[in-house]
Image (cartoon, rainbow, N blue to C red):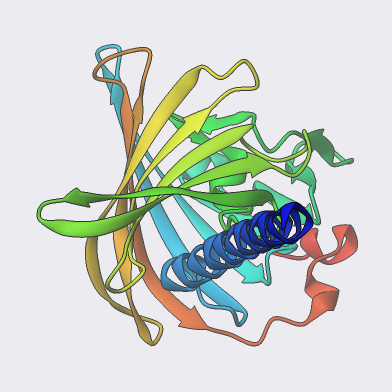
Length: 250
């Protein structure tokens, strides 16, 4: 009798462990699926072009800059400076997680970090490598209601130190996978800035956020607003995303 009870108890515990493991695996699969769907809301999977107007304010000053982004997947991106006119001709090239800036007055490209500040609250990686899939390991933490609607809350942990942020907390609307909010953290787990995704409109075949507001978590009032326009699918051959080709762009 004792042996029978022992075996039954062991079987129950084993079944519970297996169910717990299966549940954990399913949660991670769900987290990866949520992240991928949210990425596809933000940007097309296909090659595309989009213009981004960045208006930054804080410290008593305001400035506006305009960029054109040419993207082929998450590993090939060109960011051209369109405005101000004095900086027109500058361009960044991203290959994988390697990033260079080309300056008309300098013969050789200069290596940059994705986390380095581009303008206002915008880092280089915010424009050059904006998708999260591949750069972060997602974990589904919980769901919570915002404005009466359920949202997934994901914790994104950097795949390595070469990505833009060490950790991201990410809110995604459960009903349609629209991104709503992101909190960006440093390696020391300090909250750096908060991003909200706003003004969802049809663009390049999907309803996407055409305005992002990035606010400094350390300096109140310092923020950058990114306005996206003219997004269109475009055939961008891989040969474009080379240092040699970039020098031909104007």
